[in-house]
Each structure stands twice: as structure tokens, then as C-alpha cells.
Image (cartoon, rainbow, N blue to C red; front, side, top):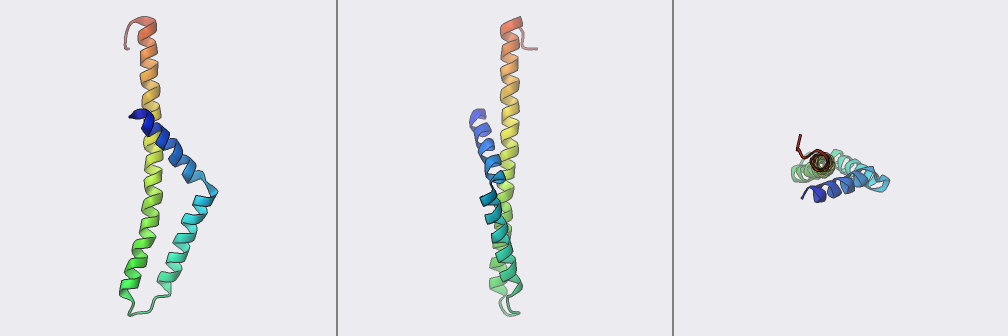
Length: 95
């Protein structure tokens, strides 16, 4: 479970650092905002859909960031478990 979370965290960090994905997120956000700004007064439904689309882009980005952080925590926990096991092996205690 921890190793899977750690691996997913690495993948999420890689995706967040990927220039193409960063460009895609920025382009979607830019295009949705531009479309939202050009809606007419009576196009409330269109504005609502565009507003939701803008927020979905942010939610996806935030979800990746959360996965990256959770992966770092899993890596730390795995490292702590490994170090504790090594201490127990060497000294016969879990201290």
C-alpha cells in the first residue's frame, strides 16, 4: 500500500513537472476564461458551464498535487519503517 502510494506520488510529481501537461492546463484555463468573458448577458447556463470547467481544471491540478504530497509522506513512512527494521536487526530493539 505504501509503496503504491509512493510510486503514484512520483508519477504525480512527474506529471505536474511535465511541460506539456502544464501547457495544457494553462491553455484550458485561458480558453475557458476567454469564452466565459465573451458570453452574452442572457447566456447564464453557458457561463455556469464554463465556470465549472475552469474549476475542474483547478481540481485536477490540485488532486495531482495532493497525490504528490501523499506520495512523499508514503516515501517517508517507508523510509522510517526500513530504518526501524534495520535498527531492530542490528540492536534487537525497535527504538
